[in-house]
Image (tube, rainbow, N blue to C red):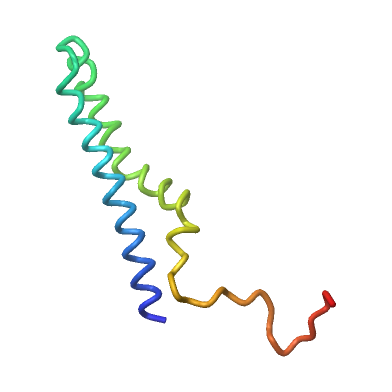
Length: 90
């Protein structure tokens, strides 16, 4: 069970780090824009919004990828009902 938790935590950390890399790369691409665009793109308000996105966006990506994060290779699928109860479908 602890290996399963370790894999899930590793995947979640991987998603957060990948999201941060994407956000930092997006901010770095502003350097290739014309000076008049850079003036507005790197304003104090936009930097505050970008810093806020570093906190908020990873939560949304983890929620969007939650099925992949929870899926651990080699683990049996979760049981939907107790095995001692009779199957009512047949």
